[in-house]
Length: 383
Ligand code: AMP
Image (cartoon, rainbow, N blue to C red; front, side):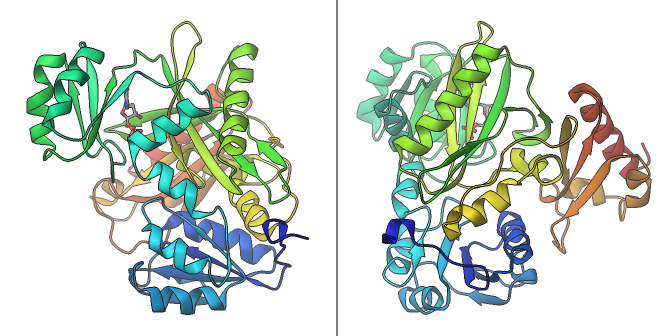
């Protein structure tokens, strides 16, 4: 077995960089399969640390601390994409790092990410990189109409973004974003936002979930419906794109491809999240092997599981801290609705906009599952 295919048997230790809910759900899946679970994070007592066998607090660029952590684990992964590259580069000297740091490097910069997607033949919205004021003119020429200006780094959930009606607003928008490197994208008149979760194992096996439809509120994912209602040809195109991403970027692990579906069925790639994704939480309750179990299998070098849904259609709704504004939510009322499951992340402080947990629900149709999960969420606050 080569190093690329190396396996960590159950009983070994799997580590994660990052202490949030994605790390926590990875850890729960790891423990279910008999692994020890270790967390390296720059905060203490967060969602992942609470359930870890080993929780280390340290800076991601503290090479000595990262090296010491890496020596304690048999393989390590990431739960968010902005872990500084130095953490992966340090860890790989001491342990298996999956996926390897190159994918993080690609997606940490939106321009690099889009160029990478184009280089493997995938469709994206028209875009133009803006590194300095000298690039504004060419960007306006390339995208004269409505657009979205995004900072190249550290943007998420709509942060670091500005809509412009046309090129005349570009310079002011760039100044408002701090004149940092940005990418201007043409505004996509999408009909629906969809996502696809895909895993690739150390042996090159690929597992692709059915596409999910996503609704956002205030740029934060609100409800995911599974499956998305897509024409077979469109679903096939989504599958082709998912496979091309993991194979084209040579990924071992789980990632999410976020997509726009245009009115004529055309699909454009918006971005890649190089880890399990909020829209994939529905796989915990609805699918044979959850996105987190797939991540464990991929990171450990085990064969991937089935990505098939085992039961009826499903939906997921996020629980943001706002739901706590009038006191503790009425969890019993939500759970009195049949086929509803509750997932909370162990966060002590329910701030507005903060992801505290999610609900999922199944039902005979996807529409009914969405209605049920919304009803369950409304029941939390007595609506
Ligand atoms: P992002 O951080 O790139 O995922 O963008 C956040 C949200 O902004 C997306 O989920 C879309 O709803 C919207 N958005 C981003 N890029 C575009 C675009 N080029 N055209 C239209 N809407 C966009």
